[in-house]
Length: 130
Image (cartoon, rainbow, N blue to C red):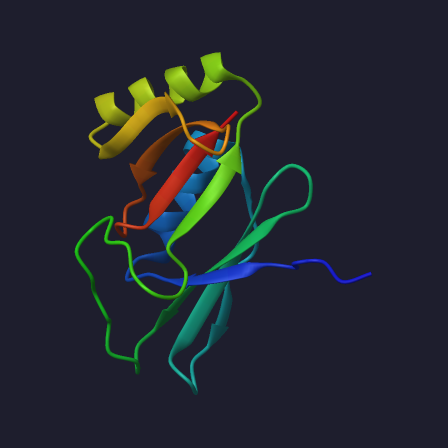
């Protein structure tokens, strides 16, 4: 049975990105992988339930940037369920107090989700859902 195994994102700072997901979403950060010949490094961030995010950095690839929170073709957001509306509210307040951009919500969406949309350290949209 096919299932989504993981999603990968580029970052300029692996430790900063991994710390964000571990601190706010109780993710477990795996061991660092480095390939010096290719100027590549990555770490997997694992969430309860089995979802994983591969956080990658390359010394060789130019860093492509977009306006933080920009909606664009391709991967546009990650959605992480935290279990309850109260938890969405609490986490959105905590992230905002810690200086992260809360760009929408918390609110009930037209498709029935209760969510807040925040930006991770690289400006990627993260939907915190109940």
